[in-house]
Image (cartoon, rainbow, N blue to C red; front, side):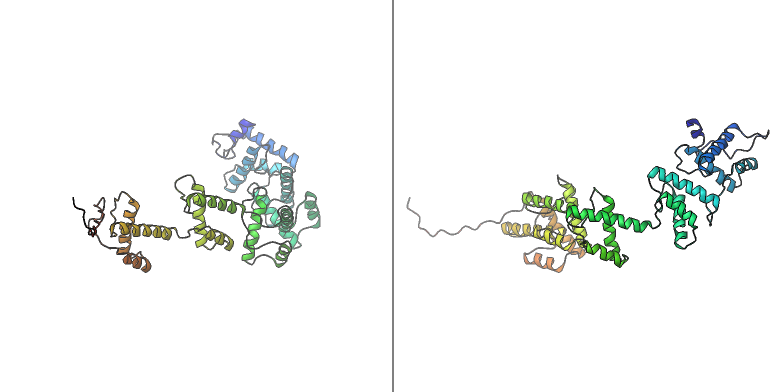
Length: 396
């Protein structure tokens, strides 16, 4: 079977006599390997009652590929007439999907649905299922036909026997609501964290509920059902947020500030979180309680403004010592201050400083144009004028 499977992949060599693209030999005899595929198909039909081998057929996936190729090549006019007749004798269905549920297609799809149930334990193929997209689309059409009263009672009973849920959305709501009730019994609230690993589906469902409420697409009956449980539409405290806030509190105690670097040091994860809080604050995505708690911690929302204040304070200290604000770029005691002073002059020329910053720099005697400020390595300290002596000197 392994050798046959390898020969029947979609990239099958054209010289393979089992390939449906090959013409029938001149003697009119179909190749043994082609005939073997036909016999395999007959065996499949004897077991399942149809020739529609699903793409996920676990016993022989190569047979499913071969069947698909037969349909495609027949549609393209590239399949030999003798082989078409041979497949017709078996009862091969050249088209899987029709607008109406023909008896042959119905039986085939029901059989495929039964196989799906054997593999997964249920017959509710989700819409858009990657494993069985045709089966999912077919089941969706069957449900629509039942809602409009166009599905025979016998067929409804047949699918009831497989356990098909006719209104999966309602069933899912009841299932997830029950999970939310259990969560509240354990945790005392309905604020399922978005990162809750014990039940990620419930976490996503709760997020979806809040989003649907904001879009005004959640039914009033369901809104009332959730509110009767104590559901809060504004997201409550997130466990991960609390954990990172605790880390930031420890960092503040150790370093005296909340300006955590995200590109260097041992706190890059915390630094990334801090940067995210600033972004979410600008987007209006932080809860009021979270903003309040960060403010109480002395959190810096505008990092550039905070750094400006820090460097301005250093400039004032520089002037107190040296009597001017002309900090050289290569000043050994504080190279950052020298670069900052040059940057302020550049920003002033480009109009990137606001009026308040310009006023404060003018107030301390800042000069906006200084020649040679990049060349001075060390500013000279002002000479201290010695006070005249008033005491009489002792005689020698």
